[in-house]
Amino acid sequence: MRTLRRFLTRLRNLVTGRRGDERLREEMEDYVARETEANIQAGMSEEEARRQARMKLGAAEAIREQYHAEEGLPLLECLAQDTRFSLRQMRRAPGFALMVVLTMALGIAATTTMFTVVYSTLLRSLPYPHSARIVAIHDTRISGRSAGGLMTGPRFYDIEARNRSFSSLAYFYFNESTLIVGKKLPTHVNAAVVNAGFWDVFDTAPMLGRVLNAKDDVPHAPLTVVLSYPGWQRLFGGNPNVIGKRVTLDQQTATIVGVMPRDFSAPTGVDFWRAAQLGPNSWGNYRGDGLRDFNAFGRLRRGVTPAQAQGDLDRIGEQLRREYPSSDGAWRFTSETLREDLYGHVQPALVALQIASALLLLIACINVANLLLSRATARQREVALRRALGASRRRVAFQLLVESGLFGLAGGGAGILLAYALTRTAATSLPGILGRPGTIHMNGIVIGIALLISLATGIVFGVAPVLETRKVQLHSALKKGEARLGGSSGNRLRSVLVGVQAGLSLVLLVGASLLSESLWNLTKQPLGFEPEHLLTVRLVLPFGTKPAVARNFFNDVQQRIENLPGVEAAG
Image 1: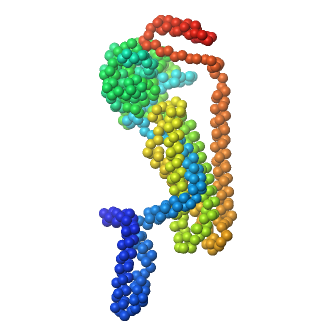
Image 2 (image 1 turned 30 degrees about the vertical axis):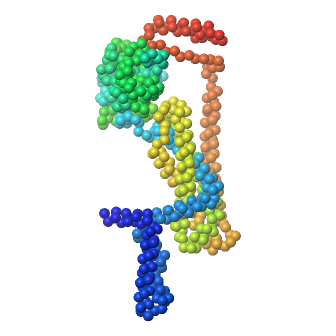
Image 3 (image 1 turned 120 degrees about the vertical axis):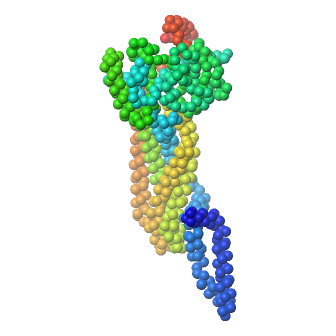
């Protein structure tokens, strides 16, 4: 408790430092006045009495420094003083300051932008409770080409009946539908058809209404849907009274029962979720590959590791291969965490780009270090004069590090602003899952880390000038016309920094050249057909349309397109 009171007192003295100095000066003057009066009464002259009183008091500046050391926070005081001095130095040389800040800003912007992408995909917690317990289950061929991990319905329900590792299992498959709201024109929508366990696996509460439950997922149950946030905005304009509204979905009446929050996107790109209304007996005895369209997921029981779950899946797969050798004999189950399923295929590329951006930041730091070394040569007399007036080497080094730290923070602030603009562009222009709305965004954690990196890099590139100033010879440096810093050692250090910078630049240049060559080769790969003057049209018929009706419809559309002016062929 005493330590806390002492710290608060020191902090108060720091905040009210000028008033504290005034009180200290008044006390010293009062002491000198009382001692002077006592000396006069002892028979001394007024001048001699005052001189003796001041000698008894001691050095006023030393008393002031001791007072601040005991009653204040000297480190923070030095930091404040050096910050003000460094800002004045920047104003005296705005061109140099601007060059340093812009150089740092480019390096920080590249690093922060890539770190934002890496953090948003590989480090940040997924928007599902206990997401580490969610695994993706894939069905793959033991040898040969697989179907992208998709699973058949019978094999999914076999896992559900035989597993010992999952508290709940989910599947979804994509479906394109036609939606009619009131008297509006039909709208093409993307749906995810899910089982009731889907909501137990991802365990996310809706923003409005409720999610689908087991009663919605039985055959012939009334059709209900849960809207995604983008679907709610696009189709209903964000109307909060949408719950209970009836719409026409693939010529059937459906009721909207819920709206999911903005960050729920399992899977991405859908307008709503609807119940599958399937069960273990929906396929009869058929287990063929024509049914392979399920994306399967599971939530691990508490205490079960992914490795144990994979062992359980291996056991089930071996049983099915023995029981159904004709349909299941060539297939096996594999699993991976949800993060690996979402971002595992882009992780190597993201890590490589993060390393490249870190190298770019290192090059920027070396460039700034060279600039500061050159500037330190011009400031040799200033450093020598401060040393001659009593400043210690540590005090001078601290001031130089504060100055370089301010350069780093200024460059970091500018770099973060640039990175924010680049991140907003990347969030909408990157391909695949990286371009999904809400996936990539900059938050407070990223900004805080970027500022820490900026400060750290500022201090790091300020070490080189500090090391060189320690070699200043006071006598020669104070002589007019002699302004050599560190002699040949300073030149050697600059030569080393330039060599390292050139080497790192060469590495980045070679990597960029190889990437450019790969992209060029990809653009020249033959597609197997001539894409010029080729137009594609996509038509979606209502779910459950009979094959004969669909065939007649498409034949009629093809004939009408062939009769259009300018059309050479249609198919």
